[in-house]
Length: 379
Ligand code: SOE
Image 1 (cartoon, rainbow, N blue to C red):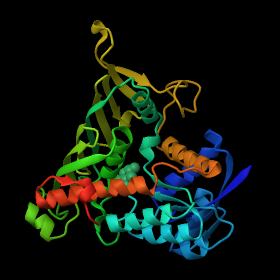
Image 2: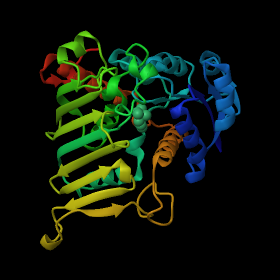
Image 3: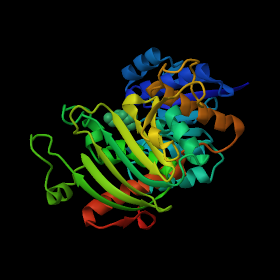
C-alpha cells in the first residue's frame, strides 16, 4: 500500500490541532487507500515546534519550512500558516513536486491566489484548499439531492456565518487583525466558507453588491463611517452582500464575528424548484428538507439526521453525530484518495481562486457602492 508522508507548516495553532486530528482519524475512519505518516511539524519557534510535535503526534519537528520542502522523504505539505505566507510556501512546495493542502482563504489577495493556481496548473501535483464544511456528510447529501434532481433548479441561496468572538473581545487579534500580516477581514476568514458552499451547491457567482462594517475595537460603539473605514484601511468586521449566479439563481450572504450568542453558526437555506433545504452547523448532522411533491397534508419541513444510508457517515447507528473532526478527516481522506488515484482534488487552487475573486468583488463593491461583475475583477 502507498505510504503518504506528511509535513505540516505552522502546526502549533488552532488549525494545526484540527489538521493533526484529521490526519490521525482519516485512515481509521475509512480506508483512504494509503497509510499516512505524520512526519514533521514546522513552527518558527523551537519550543513551540517541539511541544506541538510531541502533543499532536508528529515524529519530528523543524523550524525551517524550506528544509522540509526540500526533503525527499516528504510527499505532502499541509500549510496552516496565516494566509500571507501561503503563496510562497505553496509555490515552493509545488516546484519541489509535493502535493499541497492549504488552509482557507487560499491567500491574502487575488494576485497571490492566481500565482498559486498557475503554479498548480503547470504541475502534476494534487492541490486542495481546506474548505472543510463542504465535506460534512449532511452537505454531501444536499449535493446528491441537487445532482439527482430531487431538489430541482436552485432559485435562492441565503447564508449567514456568525460568531461572537468580536463582541467577546476574542479571536480578531494578532495576524487576523492586520492586513499585511495575513488578515483578510471577516469576508476572507469566515465569509469565504459560505462563498465556497454557494459555489459548490449552486454554482459560480456572477455579480456582487456589498456593504461592509469595520469596528474600532477600542470603542464600544457602532461601525466606523464608510469613509473612515476606507481611509483608515480597516479590515471588515461585518459584511453583507447580494449576488446573482451564472445559472440565474440569486443569493444573499452575511458574515460577522460581532453576533452575540452565535457560536460558529454557519447557516444556509437553499430554495429550489423542487423543494428547500436548510442547514445549520450548530446541528451539523441534520438537514431540514421540504419537497414540493410531498402530499399537501404533509407539506412543511422534516428533519433528516444523517445516518448509515448516507455517504461518508462512519457510524452504524443514526444520531452518533458528525462534527468538526469528521469534516477535517473527510477532507483529508478525499485529498489522499485523489493522490492515490492520480486525479484532481476538490476544491482545488483554481476553485479557491474563484472564491478569492468573489471576496475581492465584495471589497470593491463596498468601496464603489456599485454592483461588481466577478469575472471583471482584476488582482
Ligand atoms: C474564525 O474564528 C475561524 O477560526 C475560521 O478561521 C475557521 O475557518 C472556521 O472554521 C472557524 O472559525
